[in-house]
Image (tube, rainbow, N blue to C red; front, side, top):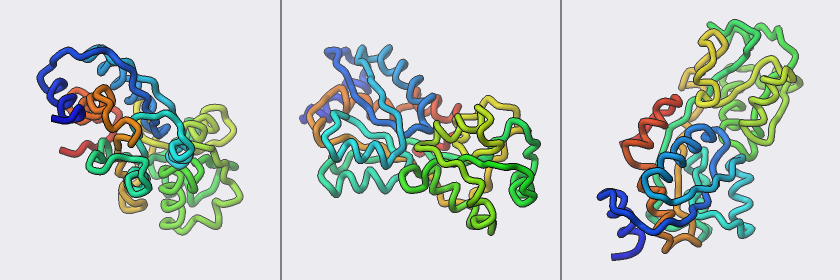
Length: 245
């Protein structure tokens, strides 16, 4: 039995294992649930988790340059597949841990009909994550395009390096509106958040993958097994994500 399979068995049985450290690269939209999952995982297994948060594309660039990550939680399914194809991820370990939701967030505006607010244009700036590196930024670009507003909104865009920075632009007042992840504003008043209809952007399937350098790392395998389990699923759902399986 490989160490990977043994780790899965240990988690399933609740058996104790030697404490270790898992380094996890995480898409910024998943910051809050990841921190809760990490704490629950440590309490259950004794393994420590060290998270590095950022845009999916930026994190993958770090992985290709030798960053010492064991696990990659992306905000899409294409980048983990690319990691496997490029030899940076372990084949057969990728899976969807969450399906994300994009929202329009504006603390100073009534967003009962977000599309109407965008069309009315009574704002100076709207924040998004960089579409080139952040899947939620790509979703924002698709939303504007499908609403026929890409050209009209282009001069008003404030672009963050990742979705966390996009939210910071709104919360700091540098932008009145922003396209962010539902998980980031799940506890905000409903009037400030418009859940963008699913037909306006492609599904945001967020995949995890074990990285090649951790192929024999039992703690990393245990973390992925925990991420697929019911305790993590309950946390993920509480932040507005859909779960699979």
